[in-house]
Image 1 (spheres, rainbow, N blue to C red):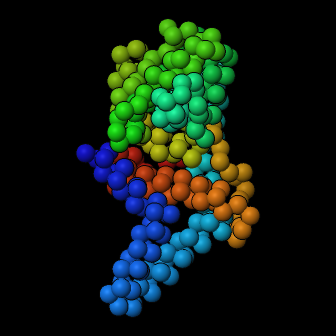
Image 2: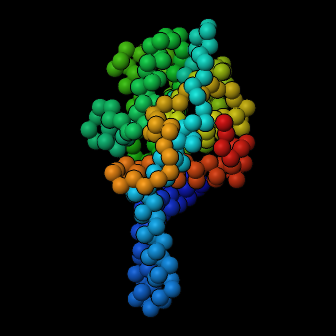
Image 3: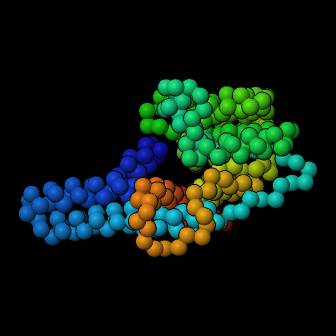
Length: 263
């Protein structure tokens, strides 16, 4: 139930959806001649759109998360396992067209492939089921088996976790698989902005993992200001940042992570 509530909430709470909803409220209030509500809703919608499209706010918010964890020093004796969190494949497109079409987070699997080649003895645990509301598509763990096989990585090295739909379930289901396979002190590969929330969830469960962030979206040196050159990119950064900060707050309040922004 929590999964579905979070999905529906985010459909409304993301910046562009919120601005649209405020505009509808303003229009409805205008029809009913509620002038104060109409003015408040219209001004708020305009501010949300302006900040989202024409400022670097999203980049600044996102880089604060990306800068929380540096890549860990790799063990001198090699890696026992690599945990890769899903979200890197366009499941709907792959389902329709085949292949390995990737999202912006596809670096998670590209980097895992590189590590797998550098450390041929390491097991690879991919955690990712179908996170859509319909549940009609293959999850990343299923697609990943074909992906790694296409690049010469034996299926025997792969541990698939196919049930998780969000980061909380990633950590919970991975804990069980690590125990059953006798694996510990693994490398955790996920997007840099997603690493604080992921590390918090694993720490809460008493699991020791080494952070290996990838898929950076910012330079790490962005400063707050106006930016009229790339409204579409600014919107994507703001949407991702708001979603991740909202997730951090929810998980902390729910007691799923030990601190608001783990580091």
